[in-house]
Image 1 (cartoon, rainbow, N blue to C red):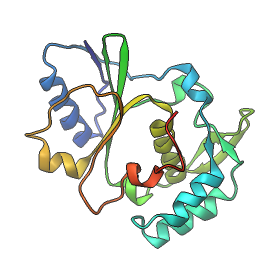
Image 2: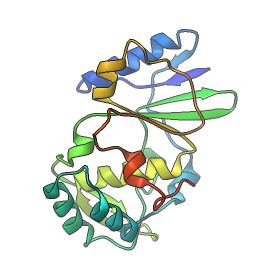
Image 3: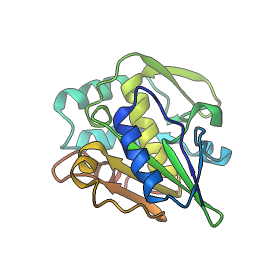
Image 4: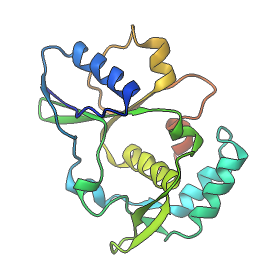
Length: 197
């Protein structure tokens, strides 16, 4: 078993989570590098019409978050690719075990408040670049991971703060999300409208 994770000095809460995973998998070989996804996963696209539908029906984001995301979404093409290269997209942590890869993301508050500024690229089906607000690009990438990655787990920062002493690291197939009740979650947000691949 291998655990792949490259520490970030500015991501302290993520680092605590990663340390807990590494300690829980003390028998695993720790490889200090950024986990990369398989190139074929980049072929999975996000429908902006479906994303618009999910934003309109969501009840956990604030009205302001929904409205600004909907406005920004109108400038994007009908199908969006998250990156043009595997070197431009990653996950926080990956575990390789018995020929399979399990991807993990540690989500902090900005993933549910759409609060990050700046502009960053997304792409259409022909790799034409569109600059989108950073918060929208992050939302699209989060949804893409749920849709594209066959073994993907999200652990929310506030759930981990409460449950870190009981969290048992075990690679699981499919999509898993650890979140507190009455908070935004991608399991609820994506629903059946954005099915798994």
